[in-house]
Amino acid sequence: VDYRATVAPALGYYVVKNDRLKVKTESGPAFIFESLQGAGTANYLTVRLAEEVQWKINDRASIIQGMEYLPQVADFGNFVINFNLGLSTKITEKSSATITFQDFYRSVPAPGRRGNDLRLMSGISYSF
Image 1: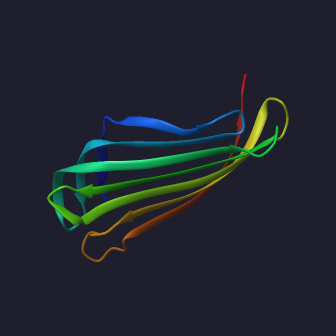
Image 2: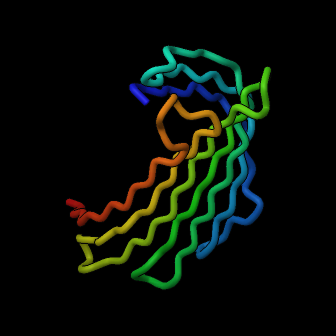
Image 3: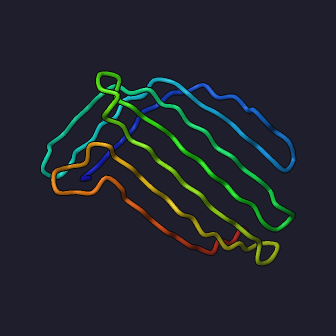
């Protein structure tokens, strides 16, 4: 993938929303602009279906999981799925450590490429 940009206005709804757990869904039309190595550029209309779960395990740790499914309207066999799962924990009152797993899946990858792009990231943040 040389680039992929998605424009997606959406409506969302919290299925669950309390102090410890938030579950939301979103949907709406979307438009994808992309350039794949060896396949050229493509711009197409999709439908965006997404969900996100935020679970505050305790006062120091939380898990965030999200997924979005973007099938091309003209060809539902051509779709993108973006998934992420992250764990964050406070080190001190002002600093946190985070580890995040991401999977970007393309059902029709560029020639010679795999459909999945996997990432495992970690970081430390400090708030002022």
